[in-house]
Length: 191
Image (cartoon, rainbow, N blue to C red):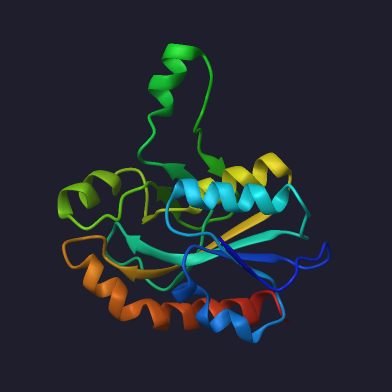
């Protein structure tokens, strides 16, 4: 976890998983929290920060794999789920929900989150039945923000097709994706 710049109650907090995704965000005066990869790192980092100070809102920016052909570019997420936690089964056992979908409204795509970098067609095809995009942190950040009562926006830049070439594609496109995310911030947050 690394925090760039001080958090203020009148500014949004930008949250990314990796320094590579934050590269072009440092030209703003907005605080940037780099959580580290995966749901645990993201949840711990965001919960730790939000336990100390409340920003105006949280904006999770990052890369995501497309689970369906034709999904590309910058996407503002309308719903986030977890693909590696069976909430329905847990509810049946306990009568409690531990991972219900989180809704943001709007007409954007559904993001599904799990501690797995999706890089095979079998997993991609299975996840495409429930979501449009996949990442490793979105749900954890959304849950931490919801518990803290802080408004959240999730914005993902499609970096790869979540198939066998995903790792190479992500490595080659992450800087361009970071540029596009910074452009979204300039157009939608700093105006």
